[in-house]
Figure 1: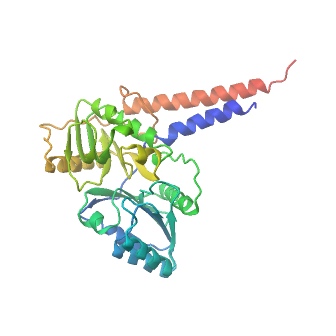
Figure 2: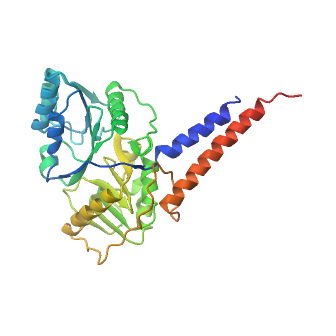
Figure 3: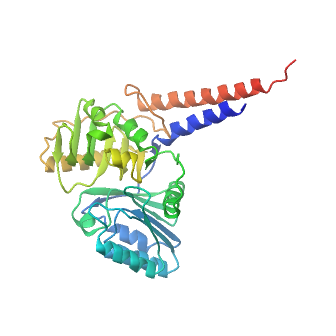
Length: 353
């Protein structure tokens, strides 16, 4: 029992880190319907392993690349959703059988209402993550993005999620910058939507049951493009939009998580919370492009939050704090908690006269 305060302090520190952004360099931004089919090229280049988790797979060139990789001796794992809105397409069932016949390890996961992730990990070095389903419409008509990130640490973390979903094992992940539904995406999305500054949102679904509409409306200026919403917000509508992107200042969220109850609290979903000024600038421009194409009124002058020193990881914040100050505050709080717990443990174990 004397170790309980220390364990509680470590648990609190883990929670602070779990929903916090990380600084990541991004090697490429694949934008559908322009160049998302390059995912196939990354799979073709795999030498050791491919871990993929997607909602529905009907794009035959990708299935061919996965099957070819397995025949070359590459370890290939594919997790698919056993539940799909409107039912699993017959083509998806046939391609899954084709993959299995060629040595791909396929799992139809039915432990969540939907496995809605769009994620690939290549050779435990390269991550491809975002919002595009590997379907003909996903690659050739829908509007969304996939980020390509070469980072071995992140790759191993996300490969672990895919493998655990393949095996039916579901720990509580606390990887900094990685949002996982139904674990910590609520905290991560609340964090970025609470940051000060102009808000840019490209989101397939924004629903009142997410609880996040008030956070959108608290921004003096916001630009939102959606495919579907039941919220009374000023948003342009584009039915081809499947993106899930939020940008505030130099912070970015990209992933498969929609602003809706099921996406946040029930489904398996994965996204990233990133500090990257260059990526933020590029995605702001893309969101504004989609927004104006859908009939939204473009801003006369776009102002963004001033760039600040980049944190390695940051914690949750009150909207009034700057990112750099917010980071320092949470590090201090975390250290105080740990030191206090250690002192308490030492005091409890002191020799009594």
